[in-house]
Image 1 (cartoon, one colour):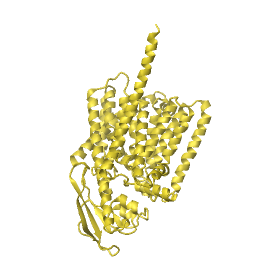
Image 2 (cartoon, one colour):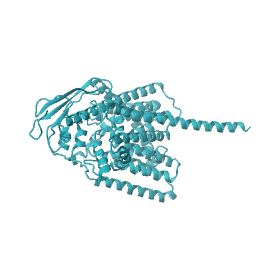
Image 3 (cartoon, one colour):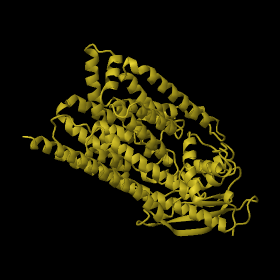
Length: 569
């Protein structure tokens, strides 16, 4: 009877169409969330186009390239060359307006969301892929960087695109052109941030592990072309005018903060860790659990955000960069009970991570003692269906130590999040989903999302308020180059670029680094006691703590009484 096979083929075709539509709908919804929320917050705060954290360096470089055709980024330590070139069409369309930089960040966020989702779909189902992307979007700080010109999000997006295309090639789709496209996006990612080199390196390593003898000639050619291209853009970045330097004493800092980075990454992965543990609970032995718990209790260190002064960078109890953005003491964004709970959850997540790591290590040790060599095990792992992801995790974690020149910030961990989540969300065959694990996972995701929202809302409000107060100081008669309205203001308006040790003014760290003379107008988050500064303006309701709600926060503008400055009004 012929109708049956015809009907079956029709059903298969309809299912494929619906699956494609589900993916498109999921990707579109995630894109709306990931792009819409940062744009909404930036617009509501009046922060569109304003410099954010370090992106004043790249904004100045892009504006120099747009206006004069010259390449100059005073104090840059990331490659960033590709980003400066990619934003030029937007600057041309905007006539040089700064909203082009926010638009660029949001476009790259969109690329990152789509690439991450479809990369995850190569390995897990629709629901799990949605969870992977939501996990990335719920990382505290991501929303703020999405509406900025920082290099982290563009490098992440292009790195995920490289891994997506590399996965398609390794799975036998697209042919050699797909590999070349993956390597091309990899080089472009490297031209923005050196960390991104892990993605194309992982693709090539997986390709070599799986290659047949007749494929190795052209694979060698592709590898050579990649090395030449990546080496060229890195050399150009090093030779670009304004390259910042790193003190030799700072080179060991990443090693010191690796434990804190592990705790921070585990905290971010908590929603998927509880699922992974739930699926594997029956295979865990009591000694593994006791050992992991003992290691956490004995070796536990706070997450990166617990470093004083905002050294964790974005996820801190005092908001993005803590007190590192402005003179004075900033009101807490996450009160002590909330931050203590966050650290306890991070400790719990670290224990779950160590349990899975011990389980994985025990299995690998058993294979090694059974006669398999380390090289054979490594090649088998690279050839496995998830080998590319494992190679990327290893390569990226290794290069964090090499490329993290001064500090190991939480934003450097972003590319690890989706890859680790995909690997953790591989449910063993025949294992049902536990309702309690799912409830814990949803609760952990809600904790991350709420934390991310309040940090982002506070950051947009705080940044816009500081910039407005700086413009007010200029309207009062101060030269913009002599105003300290925060790190981004001083960096963007500084004519000298980064001058380490150029002064010791007993104010903020960035005044010493960026100004050749003490500032004449200083904005502060809190009242100052005496000294050579006189209070000239108080804005009691400069911003709301969480943009739309929360207490109104003040900002204080002081004028210097030194002979080098005009008399404060």
